[in-house]
Length: 359
Image 1 (cartoon, rainbow, N blue to C red):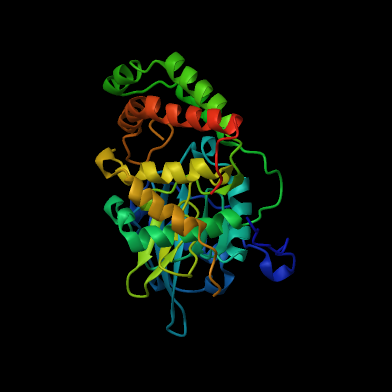
Image 2: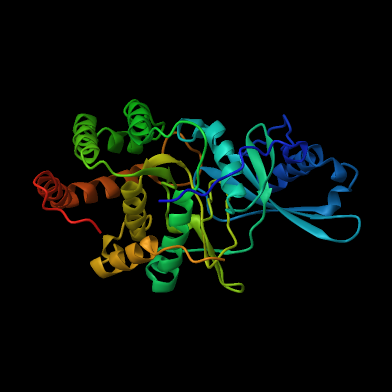
């Protein structure tokens, strides 16, 4: 698979990202937070430093379960309006997201055409250009036209070349999360009781078994999205654009018709990225009746492989039921494990005897 070459640097002075040491308390209500957001914008963008606060408006943006997303509209002296996205990192999300790796990825993905620009960074977040588009819902992902565009854009995403180590981080991160998850204490007694029903020895054994099996597949390693759920996909219905938009990174490429967004962008296998995307058809309710059929999967693969045409429960305060979500996903894993492992082992057996044909 060819790589999209990226100029190594954004080396000239014009590419330097403005920054501020200010932080914003995510626990404040929006009216309480707004003056601090305005102060932050004035500190990062000096041309606005003398604007009256009445020139700024701040509103909450939907989406994002590990960050708080805000839209800031600024009316400049000449009457033009500039829209920005402010992303406030949730507390403890550094356990989930490598912020240094995140910032590096955004620069190179943006240079590759995955586009919402990184405009500034601050003590506990970042500022990016605002994308006017609709966040998808799980049922959207099975629509043939959108599924085809997601597949095409994901292929482009996988071709981006990011400098540095290409060593897969998936299992290291899973084991790191496992360590944190297995030592939590909840203030809520009901949650603590439910948490204590988890057999972490069993979960660890499953992780080890899965790691060993997938390691034998020698799957291609790419710079992957790793969080391709509907909330990380955006669609501009007026302009008909579909792109790989990284919601947790707000990377949006104006190319065709869909946008893709991400939480733990890193190097890992192509199979994991696509397989996780298929799991996300089930949504947060984990309705696995929505899981793509074989025909829907083949439709996705065909467009993915088509040659390119020229052109967090205790750790996070965000209101999301991580504990319940774990049980829904883990129970489905156990339900599907025998079938999936059998398919993988069958493939490996045929591969070892030279009976596998390549696509």
